[in-house]
Image (tube, rainbow, N blue to C red):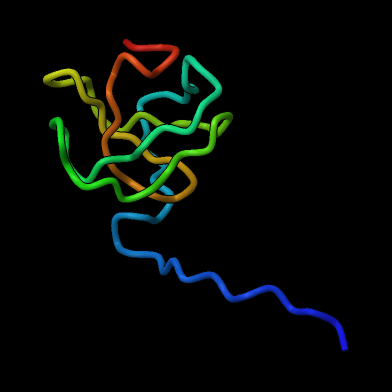
Length: 87
């Protein structure tokens, strides 16, 4: 009997759909896992761990040191300094 992988527990939400109106595509400066925050400020709940080489779609201009992004269908905020290309 073949082993079947467990079903994914993540479910898409209205904010997690692919957004075609992104400003630009970039990546992280360093190839390490980065937390995707629920809000654009320090010490907030992490909603996703972004893989090191994931494509990052910038959805809004940097404000207060954080940028709204989409990574692998999840939408949240990362520290702007982590992004390779800030405009």
